[in-house]
Image (cartoon, rainbow, N blue to C red; front, side, top):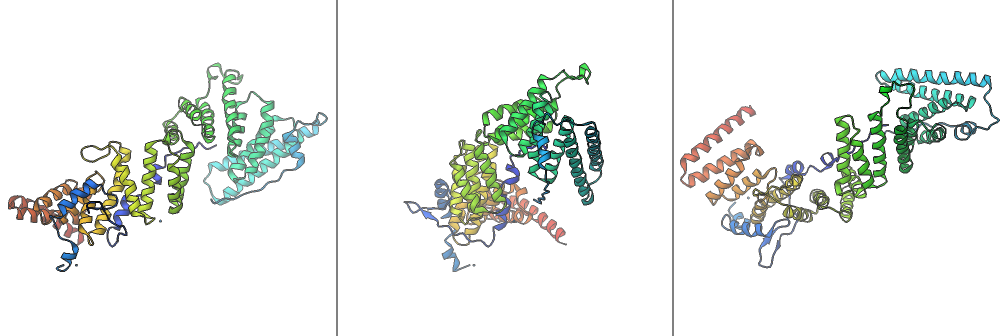
Length: 510
């Protein structure tokens, strides 16, 4: 049985808004209305009113309206294999053999022959598994399994009292179910194993295999009960094995880990979060590798995404799958519903962010999206530089910064005061590409050299976020502003850096 892990696929499943949105800076138009407050102040969607007041005041001293300036310038392969089983076979597998039905000497001999034939099939299969896979080998492995199944079925009819035959037949059924994705074989295996555990109460591995069969059929309660029985029997029978040396008769931690883990896993699948968390934490003490420990911790994080609210995290994963399939409308509607189910601020803020990204980027609801995310960013605790104190919120700040920056770029050719306001909002928080917004502010501040110098220096302090063209723009703006301010020595220093960039750029383009 394959050990399952859950990764808060948070890294693998989020929309990469920063990289996508920054690629759409040119040629886009905004369809949002810019509202005015009671005093006639322009407050664009998603912008804090205090930033709008500050931007409005500064902008009036930097440029005239575009109207006035316009007069001067312009992204299972499933196969099923069906097997049939006769009523006679089921009689021997699932019910107590009739007392009058005795295996004759002849039947016993033929049963042994059939059993040995099935064993040879499995031996040949084991050799095949070690070789590299190919379609021909895969077909041969399937044929060997089916032959083993037929031989063990024949053996159990000939001698229904041999429990070893039944155990091997159940094992083959389970293997067929996994390899052929045929649930009928899981049911067959469960029926055989149910009979075996009633007879062989001291074999913990039989309970575990029965738990696996029920797990595969998603019958969580039955699976849980049998994994719990496997652990209990394993503990009760420890030290009672005559085939082992006294020093070897200890509990195997790998097996114990397996039994305890699947008890916890089935409890979580039944939405019993408190019980499941306790059991999964108990399984950690039996983990024998760093990988197993990491898997458990990831699973615990998944369960605790909204403080043990398992239905909510399951719904979140389904909505992320819809998002991956680009069904953005359905995903957004689901996130709206999900928010009403959530308990914790962290889960609510993450969901608001996901919904805001969908609205802004894919659903033509940009004003609603940026307003929604602005609320998350505004309420978050920040340091003196505008960075979130909780590092998990950085992705929300990055998305919000992109939204503000892009709306500024889109608006600059229509209403520079609104564009200036968006850039001021973008630099008010710490986000990945804040340097780009500082550069745009410098461009809009040409009529005030001190503002140009301040914004260019802030942009160049994080110059690795600017490409060479943008760096050259910043140096050129700086040189011009310093010349106008009479600071010729400083201007010459930045001019030298501009020349070095231009020379490097020309060497690359040759």
